[in-house]
Length: 232
Image (tube, rainbow, N blue to C red; front, side):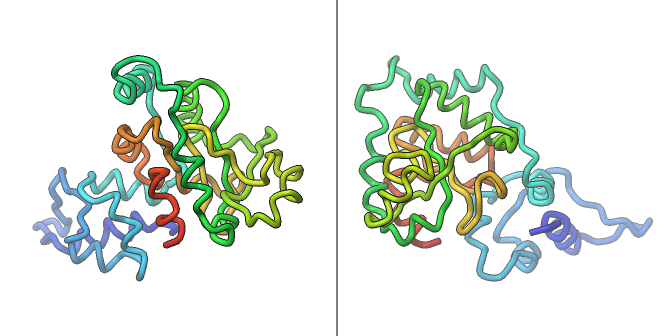
């Protein structure tokens, strides 16, 4: 989208009068709002739904993020520990946690899922999976190290041949962890970055926190992933 943030900010400026010194005076607490006609006019056609997640956030922050989508500030260690406690207020995770990803991903048609490059964060402890996601979203994928990715879903007839090539048994990303990171449609995780994150049931109740911290990433519940990626 290039410098879309700058385009949006300049569009919003049109709604404010010029001062005597010919400079536009804008309030310091402006919010990004899809009710603002200047913002709507500046957004790409047929892609307004992609910006709903920014609604109500600080305008300058959103515009800077749109201009520099790879610059992110993640959670610190204290915030990560607080998120983990929010997800599991009564102690350790249940042994049955993270089953919904496995169930619902197997309901996604292969011809849809194979269009998305993905990687399931399934190793480590449940807490370390959250830390690993935070690290990936903050620093990006290290292109100097081997990083395995695979189609989100593959048709059954292709699974056997894709398995060895992708480093996964079924030829698709792993589903049994807390998160599945996904590239944009037809893009590569390593080359193009993370666009979507499927959140498994372990962390359903911190999705709002993840969205606030990383507003340019689409966080999707595992039980809503089939409908979401089918729309894309």
